[in-house]
Amino acid sequence: MSVPKKLFIKTYGCQMNVYDSERMAEALGGKGYVETPTPDDADMILLNTCHIREKAAEKVYSELGRFKRLKAENPDLKIGVAGCVAQAEGQEIMRRQPLVDLVVGPQSYHRLPEMEEKTRAGEKALDTDFPEEDKFEKLRTRPKAARGPTAFLTVQEGCDKFCAFCVVPYTRGAEVSRPADRILTEARDLVERGVREITLLGQNVNAYHGAGSGGDLTLAQLIWELDKVDGLERIRFTTSHPNDMSDDLIEAHGTCSKLMPYLHLPVQSGSDKILKRMNRSHTADSYLRLIERIRAARPDILLSGDFIVGFPEETDEDFQATMDLVPEVGYGYAYSFKYSTRPGTPAAERPQVDEDVKTDRLHRLQALITKQQRAIQDAMVGRTVNVLFEKSGRLQGQMVGKSEYLHSVHVLNPKAGVGDIRPVRIVDSVTNSLAGEAIAQG
Ligand code: 5AD
Ligand code: SF4
Figure: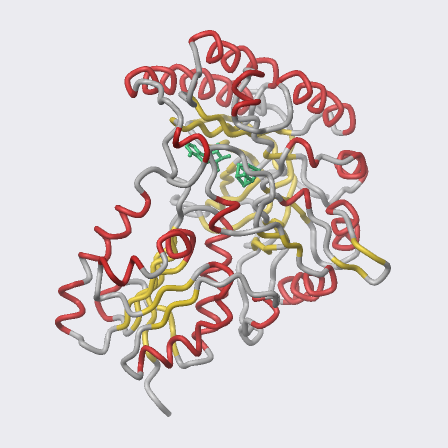
């Protein structure tokens, strides 16, 4: 038997990249690679990059520079760049950093095995196409290996919304939905391997419109199909755009018991002027009315959001509108960012807000969000939640899992194993997690 080659993958950014990295490891598994936790002994290093954060490309170049020594020690080491920076930079990566052997964009991962062969033959391999075929269908799936109780499943990729700050429509391309039968097959396979909770992923997941046997399915219809999968207990999805929260999806939040009461629904700003400049095509008011309808369907739903501060032309008044929106919604989680330019996006060309002003606004917004987040978490004390246990905790006999609201909950001696779902009474709220007590079942 040949000695397995070692693959080190470093993943940056969103959950879609985590999912993609798993698929890439599986594809290269077919070429005799096994994953290694360190780059030091690797035969191939892959950086699965993200272009959302500031200076993403620069960070990738500096990370690559650090592999020079490894390549000198092991001339057979192959180095690849995948993900959104690969898509955005393309050939430029190999020009600026000649030690890179392979550059692959997010739509071409199924071509990785051939690309790897090319690099072993001493050639460079570059693929940043947007091919027609479903890359996930072409990617090898690992033989029935057991896995943890939660998994991501990409159902949709790309985006046609073109928010003025965002690179996704350029790096991930146009919106494409995977056919429903493939998603269902993958879901059943995951459940057979021990998965109890699946998070459906897509940059614009609620715009899902994949082919089904009787025509296209909406995300809600796909969720109802998944609801029928025996052994699958929990369904989540992320990330949604407010304008694609269709009636059937809102209704599913009230009627589908496997769909968890948690929704990530970015608003980005509370100012209508800024929302317009962002090309968001919703207003603060239409967002709030939408939240009202979602809460009418599922009163206990926990909401999370994304915000950008310091977008071009944002005045103190515009920022105040964002600060005013936060308490109106009541976010259980929220992520906030300073606007930073992405070359090629419309807002990058506009006059920019002063960096100190951005920093000040970010601190104020984050302080408000943290307070609200903590208040919502604290309000769980005394309530009973269902916890899906994921792993052992730091203390002897302690288990850690997630409630339906995605709060992290730790329980001493829950008489439950990994993958079990148990009712738990919340007794304390600490930084970033809740303490619970198992409820005796009789
Ligand atoms: N600057 C700051 N934040 C950004 N995001 C996306 N692009 C930018 C940018 N250019 C944020 C948005 C999005 C989240 C994933 O990242 O809030 O919802
Ligand atoms: Fe980017 Fe989301 Fe806007 Fe699409 S909807 S352009 S992914 S922020």
